[in-house]
Length: 494
Image (cartoon, rainbow, N blue to C red; front, side, top):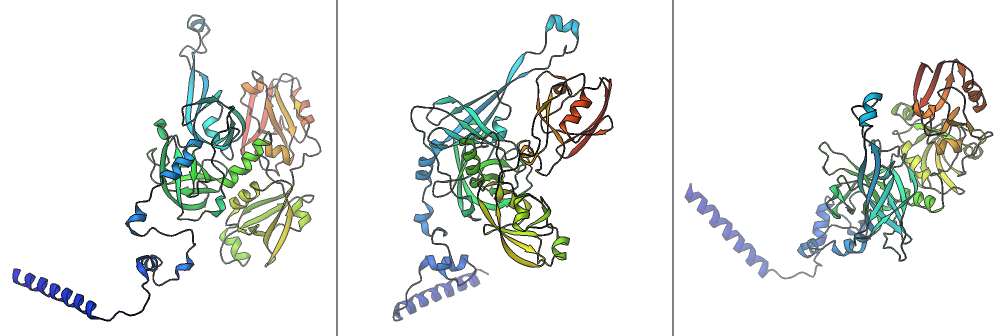
């Protein structure tokens, strides 16, 4: 056996020496050497390919020198604009004697204590405008911001939206703050390098690197928004509200959530695209009370495989128009129920959530060009992006009397009010828009956004009708309320 091994080694050595000699003796041909870079490029592209087919600003690293390149200059130019956000809320601890008048007289109720949350934020304007996640500052009594240089500020919440999970804060200083420019998230491609900067677990500012794993992710369960950037850059608790930046040092996303079975990063993180962040920030800087989406007067639903087959489509994609407001911009533009929106300003609409995202990032007052499949033909339609109408009766009515609704402010739903209450703009009925603290309505658990459908057998279609029924002298109450699409019925004696 050993003899055979020695013989094999000797043959390999002889072949190597012979090959080397032939290579030295062979005349040199005037053929341009493709180089290691071109050979690797061909291999990585699955065979012989045109090197110019790759984008000039995107390629894989070649050679030891390029593998040793550092992200340090990029981090140095952006990290100072990523801040730590500390939110605190005072809550009353539950006492074991709560509800017992005798023991409460001696021991009192539960002592108040502070509940705090930790997150990150990004300075996007030199005046002190910071973008973070809504869940970082939600219901907070005080929000403080700490910069990387050790300075701390008490911030003011300018605007927040739980459906988008975004919030805009403001801090003040006599000197301009270092910022990160907001980039174009639509320019991202799967495979692009990105950095995530934040304060995971409160250990201090941390930078991780990765790539864009996927785009336009939906149904991840952290907000109503259905258009997220997925990355494998490590994101952990405390990174929420932090920056996702590209290789140009631009903000391309706000890190928001992770998919994890253990609470730590497993390489699946999600970020809100920077184009949505830009639109939300501009609304906050303009003093908006809530984030307004452009109104086109149409409702949409997903295109299922069955619907796609019936319409003669190759595969299910786009957003199916289910209804059209006869007085809205969509109707004036010629859109009809049954039409399918395939593109929005040249961008493909893969699903209904993509259309919602594209609409929300557009300014009110402009126009959009839609590519629509209508009666088997694809055509281009221009539609105006208007402000949602107020409706014919938007007056708020304060309910009084001896009823469970006393202390609630109600109004008839209009598209604009529906946007403010974060319900579908085509929803009809009478909604609660505010609750007085300490009132019976607050005690019974009513919330802004609740839609009162029925009271004591009467259908509620106007705010005035609800006011009259709430003032009826009775001790028995039966009512139906819709909340987040769920119908709740209650009967009680009050």
